[in-house]
Length: 518
Image 1 (cartoon, rainbow, N blue to C red):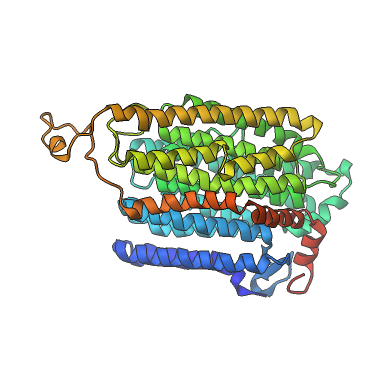
Image 2 (image 1 turned 45 degrees about the vertical axis):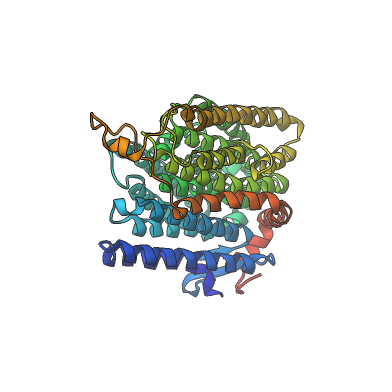
């Protein structure tokens, strides 16, 4: 039993209280500790990916109690991939938060940041539905604090909506767990996968209720229609580095749908077969439409990016709804792509907005690095919209190729292609307003700004972004380029990941067997 598996949970769990209680008044020490911890987390994640690359399902039994009686962590290709994605994104976001000074606008940023990583990594590694709920609550509690970091009326109002929505989701989660336990006597994912297929379809009413309740809970986390409305207000009002980190939060919901509704309630289970995908597919189609129209109609930059995240989640969940290895491979590739694309957009938006008078999509004085910001913004927009040559084009191409069944092709292709067109138009309009029309307005010199007669600060001084501020957004852009350049090896790994995910018998035997691993 390898103790490396639990380190992505234990490491941030140990660092968070140390930073929170010992270093909250020393920002330099907090930054160093948080950075070292995040780099170590990335190194551990790389090791876990290599450990899981041979297709072995590794089990960590806390207290050496066998499943389903004890708590287990499960490391396979999918969980290793998601932990690596989380740690890579976290390092980029942390570097931006420190370079831009966002982390110094409140005492507990780094402690909450580490608690957030603990919750996210735990959700990806857990082999128990109840502990999935526990890790959900840990990451949500941390996200509440990060959401309102640095304060402000709009941020507090959006944070309240976020709290209320997720508290409702947590309540439904508990109802689902109670119903599921009453029906099966267990909450271990592998044990559920072994027991639920044995329940006759006519006696599986409570199981179907639990499956649908869990679907609603995961839909809230994934911002799926009709419970997607919390995301635009939350992401557009959160601090930009926090919004970039939240790009992985919706993927936790998508991961939970893949893990639970494939292994436990997936294809071939008589009591629930076909129930989830019949609801999930049309909801994902509507989500794509809402995201695309939101991008097209947005009047501010941060809501525009937030609606593009909604649309990308719709595209991802359209592929997930098929519940087949081919479609899941496409969904996983698009999941990795959309995480980095959304983070890149939020980080470049922060560099632009901090040098303008707000994020309104109106022509204003250009920044001193207008060309650099424009190039990065349009590259990230191309990736998010799914245009060549970046990974967004390949991701959507894989999704479209996986959705060629007669009953799915018309709806899915129309929604994805039309949504991509509207997204392109929306981003083109925003980019031309921010970076092209603004060039017609002369930039005031610093001394002119200082000597403004009425003392107004409508035009911010033209401060250049430092290399430390530009580097994180360039890293996210490099990740998108890398996904496109190495699409073949990445797709091959993801194909093996999907095959392992749909091997329900292998998962069950690995978790429930008395040996260490299978």
